[in-house]
Image (cartoon, rainbow, N blue to C red):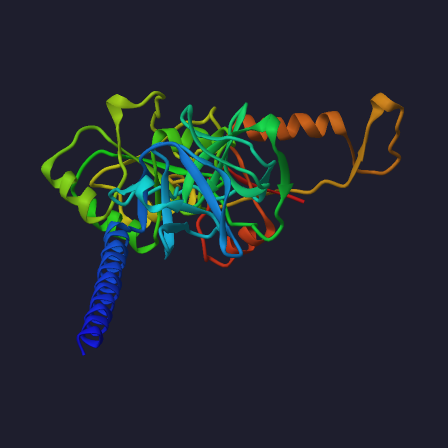
Length: 369
């Protein structure tokens, strides 16, 4: 009887210890899972140089390195690891810390090219190491410089040396990009808000001077609907509108280049002019500025039509036996005269629309046929 009680006591003790251990282990596991879950955020910063991991079957294998201060986006938790968004790479949970959401995506467009990056190539950000993986990467190019390419990885813009990569065309990434850009010097607040509302309605992108110069240097691409706004000084009203319409503006005194008043859009570094927008600028005229239409002050009441027939080049020994002949040298002189004197050469559609009274044309207009 006594022996049976002893065995029963031992059995109860084993059950108690086993159950207690199981309960304690489950509690610890739940606590650990909660710690990992509570620590998780969609955007996090790497706190120290650490290993990138990949899951191969039931094992975790080292697959590269990620460096301190790199910002990563995550999409899942697997055990004690966070999965990097859009990849099969993971980081151990305690090697990253939550950070405020950073807008790492750029308003500039991707080039229709990818950078093919060999395995174990280091990616950089402003001279600091950010990432190295043991597999080949193919990443979209977002900016081109003389010696480096900027590429997009996990919504972060990173740099790689040009000499280390192969550039591959991507045909399906053809986008409607900015060619000519309107630059506006906002001189007066009266009647300005309706113009800002129009820009917001049409979803325009606002460029800094750096954006503009990189675009004109063909280092970056921007959406077709992009403008640059310049102000002479801030005011309470302007600050309110900047916040309300999510504007990016350039303070005139801080600009590197000068942008004298003009009546044209900008397409090269040689024609950096700006449209002056004041209280007399109508909404209709502002829309014309957005489209690069010149202001018509002297309206055409008649238009010359120049009819050319036969051309020949006497310098190469050519002759013309027709009744109406013109040498190519004379033709070039006439075209230069039209250009030097500010004539606008018309398309047939523009001429027909003018004849039908649908549009007005400048006094100095001519149709070449």
